[in-house]
Image 1 (cartoon, rainbow, N blue to C red):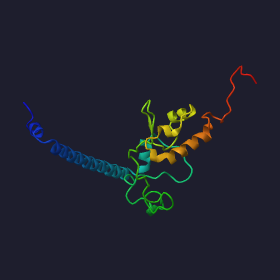
Image 2 (cartoon, rainbow, N blue to C red):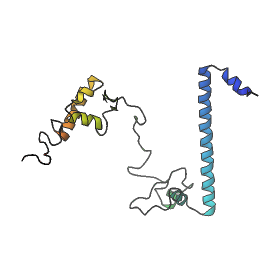
Image 3 (spheres, one colour):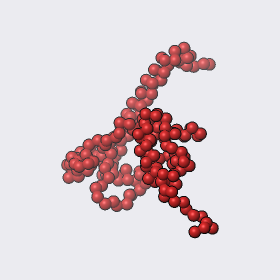
Length: 192
């Protein structure tokens, strides 16, 4: 016997069905957050009733007692910190007034998680590099074989950036593309 609700869903148009799926996903996320909050409250209450510090529980969950570290103790998640802990007992690191670099919310880049267009593409293998971080191995290898960095540039308006990377590679491998500049390493049996 077919499911009557499924037959209703199959009659919906694609945009309406996608909107319904998004609303259902949001509702699931809200429900999950409520469940997590409830669990955290239960753990806090039980720990307080037993006289156990929540930090001990977190330490056990993360693989046993951590070795003693120098400096400031690790910060406890505000969700797991016992209610009223911190400034009341003189411990400023557990929810009280915090000072210094760690104060406030952590800063994250606005670009975090965003896709970045590649600046360089290897036409033979379709490998791409955004121009950030360490130079891609395929690009360094091509440079060592005598290719120019600009040959692999996707957007020709970024020539200045390509020249900067070319200079970085020249500093590392020399103008000829070999490490150490024009000098070549002599193999076994090479004449002195």
